[in-house]
Amino acid sequence: MTTADEAAGGLSETEHSTQLRRAVVASTVGTVIEAYDFLLYVLVAPLVFAKLYFPDSDPLVGTLQAFGIYAVGFIARPVGAAFFGHYGDRIGRKATLIATLLLTGLSTFAVGFVPSYAQIGIWGAVILTIVRFIQGVGIGGEWGGATLMAMEWARTNKHRGFITAWPQWGGPAGLFLANILVLIFSAISGDQFLEWGWRVPFWLSIVMVGIGLYIRLGLLETPVFQRILDRQQIASAPVLEVLRRQPREIILTALARMAEQGPFYVFAAFLFTYGTTVLHSSRDLLLTGLLVGTGLSAVTIPLAGHISDRIGRKRMYLIGAVTMGMFGFVYFAMLNTLVPGWIFLAIVLSFIPHDMMYGPQGALIAECFSPRLRYSGSSLGYHLSSVIAGGPAPLIATALLASTGSGYSVAIYVLMCSIVSVSATALLPDYTNRDISQEHIYGAQPVPVTPAAAGPARAD
Image (tube, rainbow, N blue to C red; front, top):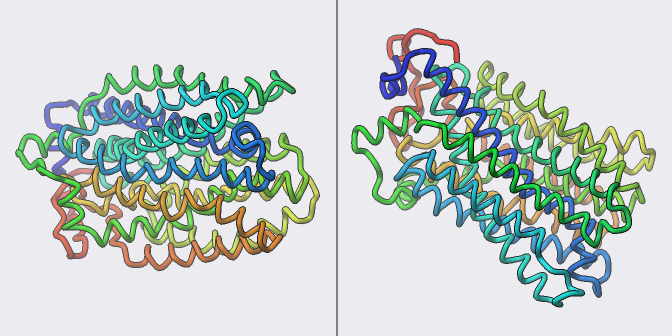
C-alpha cells in the first residue's frame, strides 16, 4: 500500500474511486474554463481589439499593441503561481482551487464590459490591461491545483500520466469552446460583431464558473495533502522553501515548456495575423481548422499521457519536442501553398506535436517536486514559462513577420524553442511509475518503488 493509500484509509475502494472520478472531472472542468477565459482573448485580440482599442494604429502595429495587453496576462501568471502556490501548500488544494476559479471567471466576465476607445479613449485599453492582469493571477494558481487534485487521488503509480492528461486536455477543449462561440456570435451579430457580438462569449463565462464551482465544492482534500496535514508537515513559507531547495527543477521545468507553449500560441494566435494579412484566408476557415484540431486533441492528449506511462514521461516529451522543431517548417510550407485544403490540414496537424508534450506534461512537472512544496514548485515552473514562451510568442512571431516578410523566420523561432526544451527536459528527473507521496531527497535521483512498497495493483 502506498502512502497515499494510507492517507485515504478512511475511504472504501468504491468511495475512493468516486472521489478520483470527481477530482478528474472537477480538474478538467476547471482547466476548460481557465483555457476558455484566457484563449478567448487570443482569438478576439487580432480580430477585434486592435481595431476597437487602437483604431489610429497601422493594422500590424495595432495587432502588436493588442498582443502587448495579451502578454500582460502571462506576466501576471507567475505572481498568481507564487500567491496561490503558497496557500495551496498551506491550506490545501481544494480551497485554493475554488478561489482561482472565482478570480479567473469573474475577471473574464468583466472583459465583456470594457468600453472601447471611441467611448472613453485610451482608458479602455488601460482597464483591459488591469482586468487582463487580474485574470492572469487567477490562472497562475489554477493549473497547479487542478493537476495535483487529479494526480494525488490516483491509487496506483501506473496511470498518473493518463490521469493528469485529462486536466491538460482542458486547454484545447477551452480553445474549442472559445472558437465555436466566436464563430456562432460572429454569424449572429454579423456586421455588429465589433459592436457587441464579441462581448457575449466573455459574458457567458459566468455560466461555466457556476458549474465549476458546484462541482468543486463537493470534493474532498487529496490523500497526499491530508497526510501532510495529519503529520503536521506543512511548510511555513513553501514558495521560499521550494526556491531554496529545488531551484533547478523550477528553472528546468520552465525551459522544458518552450517547445510546447511558444509554438502553441504561434499556431493558435499568430495564425490569425498570418492568415489574414499574408494568406488572405477567411476568418471562418482559420477558426474551423482550429476547431477540428482541438477536437483531435481530445484523443491525442490522453493518448500521449497513456503512452508516457508505458515508455516514460521524459521519453514521450522529448519525442514531442523534436517533432515540434521539425514541424514548424512543414507548417509554413503548407500554409504558403495558399490552397484552402492545405491550410486547413496544416492547422489541424499543428496540434499533434503540441499534444505529444502537453499530455504527459502535467505529471512530468508535478512529479519533480516534493509533496509539501508541490503546488508552489510546479506552479512556478509551469508559469515562469509564460514570461519567456507563451506571452512573447505572438509578439515575436508578428515582429519576425514584419521584419522579414517570411513565415519561415517564425519556423526558425519554433525550432529554437524546441532545442531549448530538449536540452532542459534531458536534465529533468523521471518519476514515471514511482511513489510521489514521499518527500524527495534533494539532489538525488528518484528511487524505484519496490513491489512491497507499491502494494497490490488497483484499477484507477
